[in-house]
Amino acid sequence: MKRIVLVALVAFVPAAWALCGDLDAGMQVGSSTETPNPLWVKGLAGFEAEAGQLEILGHLGFRTDGVYGGFMGGGYGYGNVALETVDGGFIYTGDSISASLGKLEMRDIVDSPYSLVLSSRNNKALTASVDFRSGRFFYNDRWIALSYDLKNTYAGTDWSWPNRSAVVKNWGVELGSFRVALQDVVIFTGPNSQSPAFDPEYFLFPLPGFFVQYIGYDEEAPWKKNDGNDNSLTGIMVDWTGDGWYAVGQVLVDDINMNRFLNPGGTQNPDKIAWELGVRHETDLGTFGLFHAGATKYTFEPYGNDSENTMYGYTFSPDVEYEVDGEPMALQPEDNYVGYLHGENNIAFMGTWRRKFSTWTAASSLELTISGSKSSANPWGKLLSWRDGSSGTKLLDDDRLEKKIVLAGSAAKPFGNLDLGAELKLGWVWDKLDLVDGTGGNLNGLGYFYPSADSSPIAELVIGAKYHVPF
Image (tube, rainbow, N blue to C red; front, side):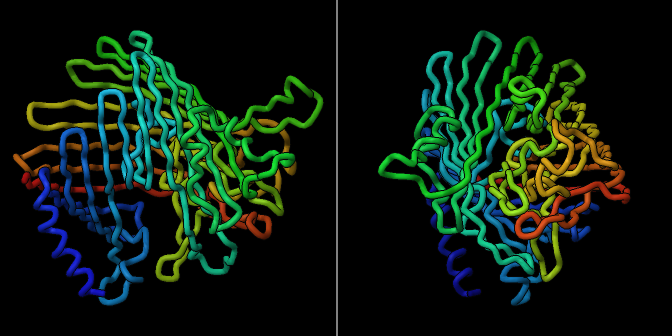
């Protein structure tokens, strides 16, 4: 195995050198209270090249923070070094049409730390996208591989995880300084791990997924789609840019309780809604921003009961537990949500500042978040069904709530082909979310996060450098 890796690296260098672009190498050294290993190193190496309107890139990396298992299981002397594909793929940028394919960074169409449809963490995933623009109209369509060919590594589980993907679409119009867009998300799964991870009908049909969802499920037709579970979310965004200002409003809806109008005396199912509001303004002292977001309970969770789990939650993984070196690990919510990074049953407030000086850039933020119980795996948390609790919409109704405040700052400065940067976070969390066991059997026994009685400081310092070699 060592010989194969060495040959691949030797072959890669001259091949990359034949391209026209940059060779990149970077490293970060950090200390954090939020990672299993409090002292860690991350590194990457790769290339970026352009030819006209086409860009190709590829970066490999390693990390020793202990969040994921070591290379080759930590054997062969590799310890806790985990290898990863940082990014890689192809990007075409045209005047009216752009497209991308690969493991690439994904951004929402709004410029906000609390974007709802695609996380403001700008996660990287296996994805394909098409962007179209004509006059004032714009449309973009993105497929995202959430989880496929998946094997659960947590002890005691023997069920088969289905392949899961999502398609995100935006239809928008520019009206002077305003943009208005309809946003659409579909999460689709198959019945098992042999089901296709890509459904071309959702991606290629440029209409909302809610309608596409029911095409092919007609029992009276001579065909029927393979049994699976699909879910659609619908949103709308409005933003405005002008004279140093930027303002945004965004709503994303999974389910609205129509019984309040159709059957007021009947059972009221919960609304599943996320929202955000924000404003940013440029001044001589820098650019200041103020943002707020939130989501009701169950918004991004899958549907289920004591015998069913649809696994169509808007998350990268259908589970929240895994193992590293035989030890149980919790997949943190912010690392798992595809959309709004804090997930359901949360409200958040953030103030931001950013300023570019002559040769360097500085930024800072102050954030307050309040969270209740949540899970991207267990449909109803401590309940077997939403009917087991009082009906209606839920938000921060747990006996205890997590409260977190974090002050963050960063600075970056280029020195020719060398970029240097540093990041610092300081804060405190009260009643920290902790992973607890589900109350049901089968898939409803999966863990969920619930506020504990523990409080602790938050501290992280990261220093990094990246060097570019043009060729």
